[in-house]
Image (cartoon, rainbow over all chains, first blue to last red):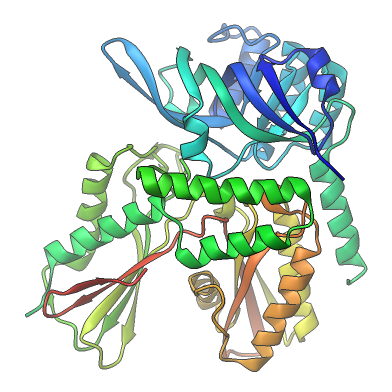
Length: 197
Length: 289
């Protein structure tokens, strides 16, 4: 089966997200927001509960589980590198974030569970798999650091808005139609294991 | 003549830096072979990007992965080796100096498990174990930094007089549980027998064996082949988005024990971080990989 590579402008719209199919590849241009922090995700939920304001506008964002090394010199932030982290750590947080912020793209590595996939289907959102160990290549795509939020947190926990050009290719691991490659493969492997193959 | 404090400090820091910026040659070769065999197109492309990523990090002296892990060293000490200075302190200072000088700088991954505070230092860091080599006038130092992505999925279970299928099924259950998450294709290390602590160490050491080398125990040669075939049929594939390259190698160590048999399983992600050097009493330092 042949796969399709799309070049798309981010933040991804719901209609663009819905054109993608699990297994496709995407090259990213435009604006993305990244963080790798578990405490950051807990704090996002606090923001949804009105306990504090979001560090930047996340509505309709393309929010990825990518960590970054940020450094402030002369009042300006530079990002030395970015790289994905394991998304399943955020399974408990993502359904609410996807629904209430109307995210149309999320991602990282390792996938999300079916509760997130269901929220993604409702919101018109895809999950994109970045290359773990892709630090050097992924970082070359950074064009501009637009915003760094929650600088009181550790560098990889901060919320960073970036403009990127040619980021990827990344793989659509979960599409907006409920197709979750991760759970599908996992279930097949589990079945194989039970049958002793 | 002796192995000095300065030698150990410099070599351990250098091994760590190298392990972050280049993947071992055998691993690159295994990825190339996997990409020529992989039947899933997305998986094949992912393997090719892995190779590009590793090559770019090496040529630009940048990091392959931002999760630089925590420092883990294995020291094999020749009984004829002579030391001039403190060994543990040298490793500690070497790591501290590396953190202060490495470019690009490292993220703070050393975590206090009781408070979840993170930094570059902590109790027991760097994690170092020591073994003896009879008669040798050198020490071998292996560095294998451990990061979260693959470190999270290791498992150990203790069985009573298990047969081989029971052991193999436990390995498979652990692999399926880890699934798409440890950045496959992985190197899998298995330790069978001994005691609780020793099985885990054998498993970790098994991941450090060069890909393509033959296990000296014939029963394990067959077990490694059976497991590798089963694992690559699970379908997880490169980065877990599908394919038949889920593992580059399964390496198994064993040791005699009682009838209770611990089986430990651990993973190295596709980067398979591993560097090694030998320091001699006469001051020579040989980079082995």
